[in-house]
Image 1: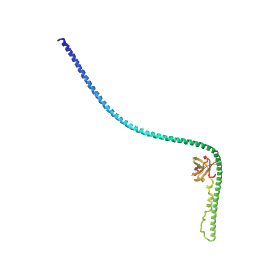
Image 2: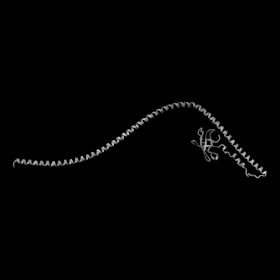
Image 3: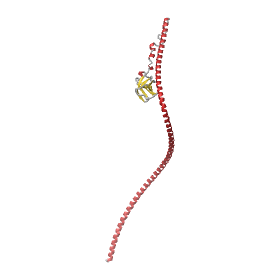
Image 4: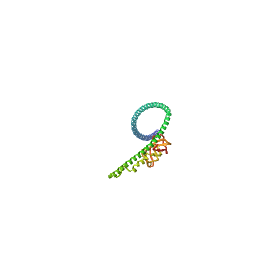
Length: 283
């Protein structure tokens, strides 16, 4: 075998080894490319699904944005209308404030003038009060005298009624005796007019004419409680005159009566009564 042949054999052997290596590398590389292709295709499919999902979400967001935009436009329109109304109300309030400011100025001027007038009237008011107190004292005295005269007159009238009743009874008895003397039977078994004991009762009874006197025991606003009641002759509607050291304070018109106490409303109040003030039906 020649040297050239040997070299060719060696070269063929090397070429065979190279080709085998290339074929093995090619097969391995082709398998890797196929797996990579399949992986990329899977990723692409997944990306397409995600993309479709994202597009659906995006569409939903766009729809929500459109609805929100419509709602916001409506709210903006309403707010603009409210703003216009508020601006109108503000103008109205400002005009009213201006009018009130003018009225305040007018009233302030009138108040100053009134204060000056009041200051000038205080002196005459004090004098009028003094004269009024004197007139009230005189009126109290006159009312007291009038009550005494009225009570005396009522007593005299009661006595006169009793005397007239007694006179009528005596005349009836006289006529009865005259009929008996004439032999006539008495047709009346008892006098028409009550007996003197009954007829004299009204003259003794008029306890309502006697003055009643008690004390203020409690005061609640315009209500006052007096220390006497029905046992002392107090009746609803009576008027008690309240005094402090012979000075007239007010009247108490009785509205509620109990056995030992009575209560009524304050009238003609000159000053606030106090517990312990004298309350009497006479002046």
